[in-house]
Length: 168
Image (cartoon, rainbow, N blue to C red; front, side, top):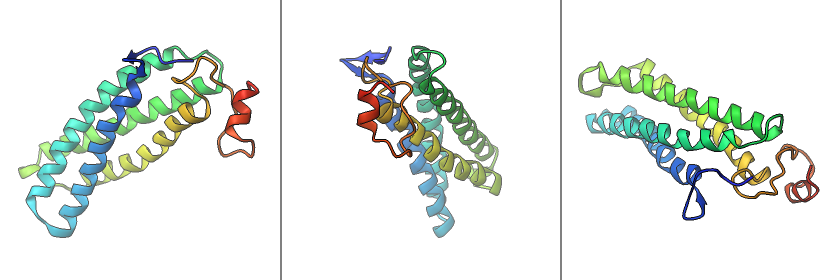
């Protein structure tokens, strides 16, 4: 099934996710650099990139939800899309919590709870990102009207192209 939300022939959701993904990863890198160097600029940079990343994630999520609504019910793609989307809601909640914890501190100071939220969030991004890749690369969601919305897991022994062409 092709994406419901398109711009110039391309799905909007995959276009938008690169911004919050990059910003949230960069925020964690700034946190690590702050832990290594104790330079205040890194913790301030982490807070600003994190805040913008959360806002961008909310925008990308609107388009992702729109696409998810178009996936046929009862399919593997619908289940994976739900886990992907809900996982990303948790990611954004963790980063938003980290941001609010920093906001309450002097100079955006990073305390352990704020760091834990962002570090758990970045691990979860890896999982939800893989699920998003599974939706697009394996199941063809947002790419093709002939999507294999019930194709087996990419970690199974069957090849993705064979599964999709057989309509599995």
